[in-house]
Length: 256
Image (cartoon, rainbow, N blue to C red; front, side, top):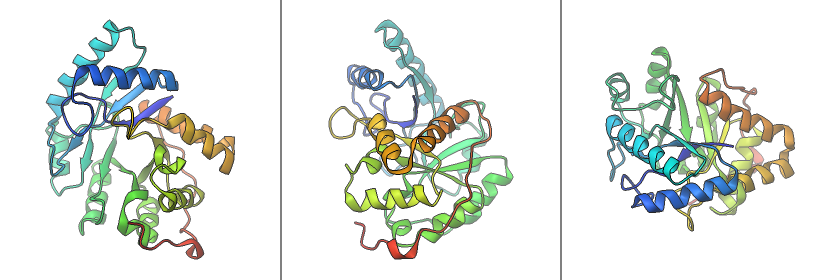
């Protein structure tokens, strides 16, 4: 399996603090059946900065330690970029990293309780420059939970999204789980990733999430999500089903 969103780098954000902790998380991933992890430390987060060059160095150090520890996982450098108005300029100078160096995909996140007013225009500008935004964990955003048509418009216009494994499994609450299932049902998400930070409170749960998706939606959708992660690594065209608005009868309010 490939995990496209994981906070595995030591000492850079709210993930592991030490290299030893990173290695323990990697062993947990290996036991889960994960062979490739895209490291996505926070960028332009209120509490964390993490420049592109610093992440490249950290990933190189971690991969060396993984080899020395005989852990069969490869880590690739990227970032979870808090959306900001200068993201294009930061991409061009290498301060913001794409999902892979060869790709056109950029993992972005919103504040948990808002959507920046300039988001639609910024997504358009990114796409005009050849980039494809991937919205991280939209199911955990209060505005999108109350107004899912906003997400529908983003996806309809070519933006991709990634839901969190723990949202699928219900570990982030029943309402988040139900909204996540609505997004999957409406073809408003394209990837499942762990957003793992540690061994206990925020582990991978990726295998469990795929099992839940198989039970609710069928094995074909599991294949599609897993294949999309592989296609992303290869910078190929992601499989996109026709998006639909979230059904109003299931609309959620007061998610948080």
